[in-house]
Length: 371
Image (cartoon, rainbow, N blue to C red; front, top):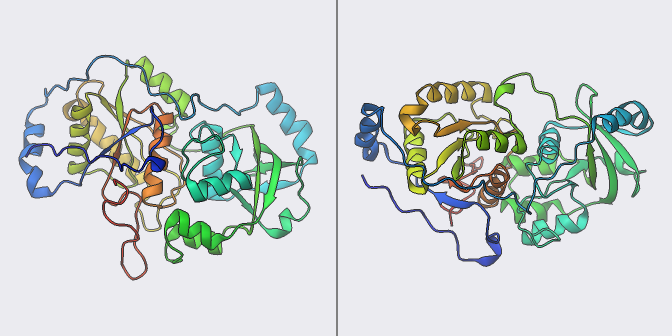
């Protein structure tokens, strides 16, 4: 069957970043009966070549450049041995560890720390940073009221992982409380606590938010698939080394099946570019297949990478993101993150980053994110 045309972005200007943002290549999930012939053709033609077009530069990071807030080795040693022993300690939650890794590695560029109240309000209400740049998701450091009670502007806090490793030092520039119901309604479009992010917000997140800039000491440590974990800067260097230019990023929190392969192949052909498979391995939805199993599925697919995507046509890199399952806002967020990795295009799937309520109803329409 012929490739359906891309679904255009919404014309609403306030939802669309300025020139240079990732183009969303929206594709409807393929119905199995409609793609049997195409899949059979692909499998039978191992020498199927893809025209990747003329060489081009990687897309510019959101805001113009990748943020680098990691301390030098000498400064990191000073923070560990001299500065942090005299600071109050905060043990980060699993979601906070995902967020801080994305802040420190530049994936959340142009953010340089956890949001203060001004930035938070602009993002929640208008999806804009103070600079005017589009940013749809609040990135906040939630703490208990007891922890926040004696914290003041200018004070520093040692942020640590569950093993007490120093990850970063935060310099406080704001301490504030928010209307969580308003945040849930604006960002997630619901206050139903069967939504996993609403449940986190209402029943797990602290009641006080601390905003501030970060000085990174080390990225959170991982003990698996380290050969597939790349910061945006590392991924960009790899893409340049391979001669990549234009490419489409594919977001997934599920194992890939044959229709996903065909979908990404068609996207590659449509843009005359390559494919960056960039699965989330941070926090996803309760009940999802664990990421270790999923990564092995992706690796198995890439054993036939040349057959499906052409020579040097696909690259696998893992993303340590904590998903919010925020539907339309999350789709935009995901595209900006992949822009920081250098992507020129991004696949927005059916019911992208969606989930169901306890009654089985979808929180978002099947094409809300695409529209």
